[in-house]
Length: 555
Image (cartoon, rainbow, N blue to C red; front, side, top):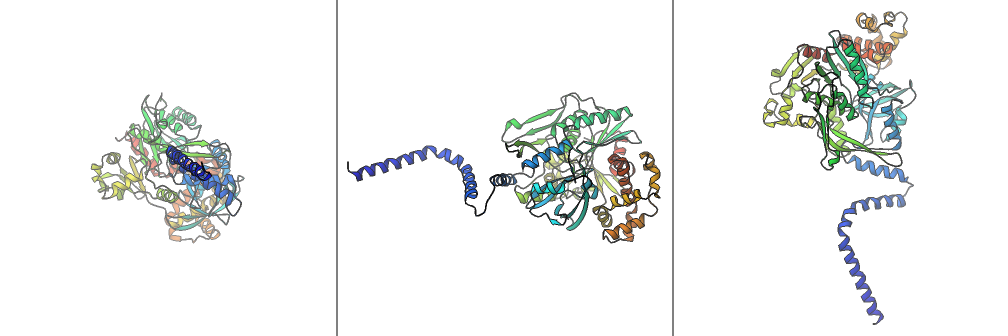
């Protein structure tokens, strides 16, 4: 055989081999094509990019990019973030008390922690922090956020915040405090014999804390119970299940989870023994800051006709995350299933995937649906109305969502709005009047904290007579005779325009806000809560009226 013919035969054999191999492996190649593309891109950037890049940072950025294309609650955590996140559940850090995310290079306040320093100065879910200590926060990383916002207790941080709903830039001065992850902020019995428990989050010790609080109230002769979940962003699902167990009979369904792809993630959670408070009347207070595990608890008690839900439509977070840790200490917190209330309601509100979808998701969370705009005949659902609030009894609304043909009780086009909003629909939907701009400016500037400290520092103030007894302080202390002068002075110092007529209209609310801060400084967080609950909280008034009428459930 000539050399030319030999070469031709070799080429043909090689070509056939390549063809055959390609045919046999095409399925495998198609299946791994996407993964190979990612690996190739990683290698190209690492080896050929014009500047030096860190391999770990590049990998983290790639994972974060993938996760941002998913739902709003799936996140990638760097090692430092994992340790910080764990610390929040252990209660061993000092900071400003917010849950945050960085979306499109913007630092977003997911929620201020109830009772924390950020909540105290009036920061709200959906706020964008655009500067920290006069340095731009645009483009900030998660690690930089933690380093800048956490710090020694008692130190302050200046935040410039943009609030999209109002279109305003606002300045906040936040004093770092120990961020306690204990679940119970306050436990006491109201004058009418109703017990009150303020539950701020669901951490590893929540169920144990709750059982102790419940036992304490029962010893004090509690007749009915109010569980306050306002501002509670959630936490451990299992802890919410255990709390619900205290009110339900054995084998009653609390919540169930379902995954479209992985049956391993499907689970049913049922009550085991209960007997904590299975017979007394219960009311649960919620607002748009009540999310996740809070909604599990509220939904379980509502569907099992064990409690009345009072307040606003809740946040609408019905996605379950599991944390997968990598060897370098980083982690992927991935949504693996959805949860459903016992009646089959899916609480998760609609969202659009991707970075823009995340930003819109949290912006929408700030919009508070008003029942007067939902109902075709709102007056027919009116339960109570006064100068401060309107209360609508909404017993048929969840049924409307499960049976669209009954949607005629809603205004045209509002069925889809309510369905997409998700969340737990309260049995008694409370709509209140907003505070005046002047009050909100004082609130945002931390003026009430400043005023309280000035009053406490004054030996001539009448507050000095009430330092030893919270009960006497609540019943006897009203306001400083020089309150107007003090407010005028703080306005001048904080460059807020003092409006005489606005001050007159809001004087009672301003005095109450200062009194609550005084109680916080003298008697702790529970003191501040008790001032509001016992002197002005409209939801407590509604709860007392509903529970006093013997209503334990409305469906």
